[in-house]
Image (cartoon, rainbow, N blue to C red; front, top):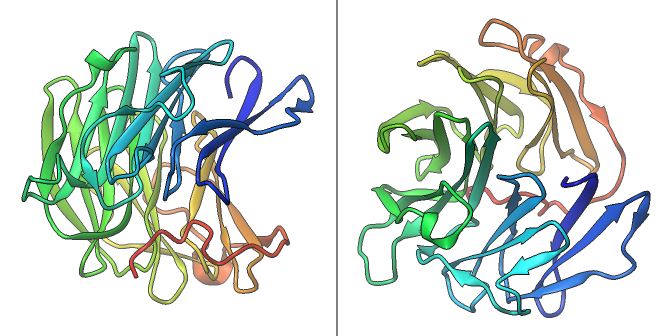
Amino acid sequence: MRDGRVDVFAIGATDMSARFKTFQNGVWDKEWTNLGGRIPGVPSVCSSEQDRLDIITLGAGGDNGVYWKWVTQGDNWQPALVNRWERLGNYSSSTVGMSCVNEGDVHRVDLLAYGKPDSRNSGFGMTTKHRTGSNSKDWTGWSVANGSFKGDPTVVSTVARADYFGIAEDGSMRHRAWLSATDEAVDETNLGGKFQSAPAAFVTGSSRIDVFGVGTDAQLYHKAKLGDVWANEWERLGGYFNSAPTVVVLDAKAGEAVVFGLGPDSNVIHTTLTVGTGYFFGGGAGQRQWFSDGGSVSSKWLRAGPA
């Protein structure tokens, strides 16, 4: 949302171009605005400044590169021409994860993808990039932490750091991080588990992270980090998932969030979570309530996980 409006982004079914439509003053645009490109995956969008959106896509130029467009108040898209996207390099094999920080004087964008800085580089793994200002010159170079991963990764950000999550070839969840003050990478941590979906995560405050994934039994699992310490075990939250989970934070200060997914009949399901002082949400698989929101949605929705 920017300036009291909501912008929705999608990929055209026939030409695979990026499109957006705006809801403002109680009215949706009549037509989708075409931003061009030929995009094979899901676009990532976030806001690092008031009345500004950044959109990142894979392959807008017809290759496996990472591409960028941004818009300020008044729909002043840059690069301005349809089908013009700025290439940020990289050679990616996944959808690009993206997270923004807009707090005080910090206006940062953090990117994460499985790939390598360019097609000639032999190092393939978790690649990251950051933008600390408003312009192209404010992007850092791509950094690479080699390793074998599958599915799409996710990134969550705070003023002090960006935290990265991905699924390794053995199905376990892995965590890395980057510290903004020192521009240093935190070594990889194996969080264990056995997952068949891409991860989802959210942050509340500066000292807690909650991460989720769908296990091989199709149920949702959760693990939290308090300060610098991860919980020893994964908490089973139940449900029955035909998709990866997605998380919407309702109130970061109050620690309220909703987890959505697709249920066994392709209906949308959800549960509401409230962060407390401990590692676990409580309730367990047998007690936690999952609610059906109805619908009949493709089981490919947000699957984006290990095959």
